[in-house]
Image (cartoon, rainbow, N blue to C red; front, side, top):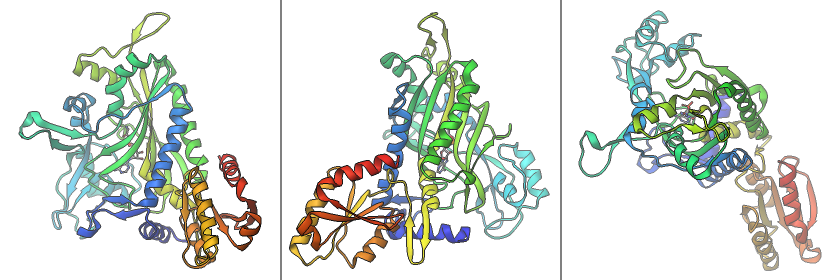
Length: 458
Ligand code: GAP
């Protein structure tokens, strides 16, 4: 299957089967906004829960928080986002569409130019003869800095003092809460503060479905360490991030690490490496990031807030600023990659071979026929029993073959059919999504059987 074909199939499956709808559809849509449907929201929750279990619950030194989306405006002054969270914007003089200058150059050449000074980008645009992707013209305004923070007003009076920002990264919530976590949880170094939540960016270049949107969810950890340990922790987090996504079924050949160039580094970072995935649009692009943020953020917040953000060593009593390694994961990009990786076709059969732990439904229950009361009632009992433990789908439409296909397409790992024999022997047929093999199991053993399967697949 060609790459554009695959992307088209995923976008269409997402809409048809209730994973992702275009945003504000009944009003003609709002570009680059989306609504996660009944199955998409389950998949998102399962991804986030799996992440939380792995990086918060299974790591006693990591503490979860959930901070406000709108924080004190000084947070963004201190963090450097008001002055430095910019992209280079150009406008086509013919059709007035706006683009990121660095992306236009990179699309036209093999150069990596993200973060280069505006004057250099302007020269390069001429050198590689950038043309407008919309109208084909080659005349643009000079690149200018465009800040990505969304501004809004707090309260009913609009003046400068009421300007606030939608958070551009969840990370700042962790730095602002750091002192509260120190005082309430008394952690020893190394320790982490984690958060999952929405971030907002007034992105210039969007598109490619849910890859780049104005609002998106991040799963981030600020990991506080001693300065001399940063390289070790950077390497350890590289391994942890890689293993997490590979264990969810993403093939290693489609993943790579890429180190940021000096120009490209964010204002707070001394070293950043991205996990890139070979997307069907334009090849390897950022999936996740890992940054060594040094003690930049804590020092800035101490300066701007006046709060003492030093950490005091329990044994020596020495006070110092911890350094920070930050693993960051995009939720929407994870969902997109898992759909791309799990989609398969076998003749007419379309399959999402999702890891059972993150599949929207674990099991689907079918009465073989829908007009025989005893079978339907028995199936309802089985549904109620299983649904108290797992998320279970019910389907009594059409024939069994169609129902199997329908569940395969949304990634349900197992289907259970209640048939005439069930009324005699209290057994049901379980059919496996990946092998299509069937086994007969006693109803009393079903919960254990699925629990074991889910445990084994971990
Ligand atoms: N705190 C560091 C930080 O925010 P980032 O690389 O700018 O780093 C982290 O963003 C992750 O958030 C990215 O690796 C990506 O998965 C996701 N992400 C960033 N911008 C996005 C956008 N506009 N739409 C969807 N996901 C995005």
